[in-house]
Length: 304
Image (tube, rainbow, N blue to C red; front, side, top):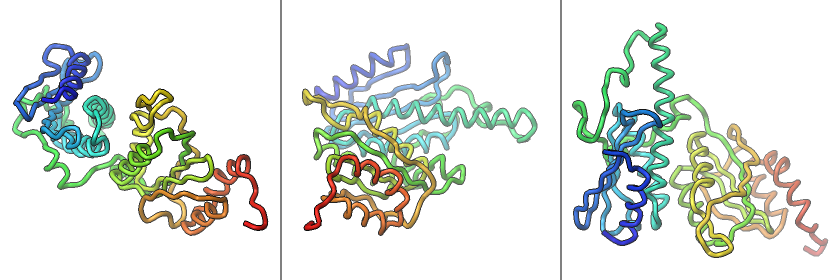
């Protein structure tokens, strides 16, 4: 186990410090972390997340497996956590993966509780799966083994927007600045492509815009990553989170849109306008970008 990984895992042990909540098996070149996640005030674990690390970590994300109250939850957890690991590749990621796992679980539990309420009031004649099952740990599969990352990825991710029948959406974000432009740009590209989002990272003058197009849940996930992850460096060169991002627009998919995600640098307002004209996103351009460019970009001379 490397010193960096040992330090990460020691922090996790300090956070998940209740009895039986966290265990680390030092298997030489492939250490294993097991964490039981649960809601505050509850005794029964909602899910158990297991991460196996290779000697190439963090350049190679951990292999993730999960055991939760039902197999569907496990598949969704593994799929989304594995994707997050790919996005965070190359840096510390254990804490962020576990934080994301807890958020996903809370969402799934809320949906399950709503279904349970419908069942008890006669809307659904069956008994909910979560109520039939008792506490589930990595040692108690109740007839089902844990779901691994390879198994979950074969079926593809399941997003809340797909489950609810929501269509694609468009979002327009604005960043205040980038101190480490190369690092920040690389991170944005990884997130957007990993979440199957089209659009662009657009630099024009001192302005930085991000256009995102894709399923609502994936756009929401991107925004969450943007706000909660270390994406840039501060004035002292230390990694920091994005504190000054603005969501200028988020709504149903407009126009023809983008085919993929790319990085675009524009030298004048006419180039920006042409991008939004080609993608049939002119209302987005006129409502949110033009007012800002007019304030800060000097008008072009006739010779330009």
